[in-house]
Length: 140
Image (cartoon, rainbow, N blue to C red):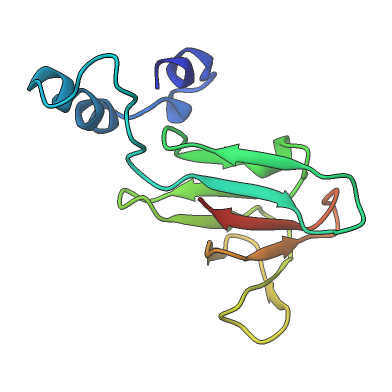
């Protein structure tokens, strides 16, 4: 978490005070030794290239990241990945964009317009015309 805090360029990218409290409370109460690794507080998410013949691309989202603008990543998806206070992820589509998505919960590809919210579930695949490649979301 300290590394994430130091690397964060914006306040929104920093671990929240609640995240710090949950991580440090076991240390302060003696339930956890400083030499033991901290267990993840919320699920990690892996975003990978969904094109099987393309060069593998992988982006890992750890428990300290609360949002990631995917248009600024190698995927160039015009959506922002956000985490709720409960630890669940969703995609918020950028203005002027139509994003296509499919998951095991839907039949075929679905189109989502700007500012729509798409819940991120294990196996979700998303694509937009401006993206480098389709991206698949995997929970760890």
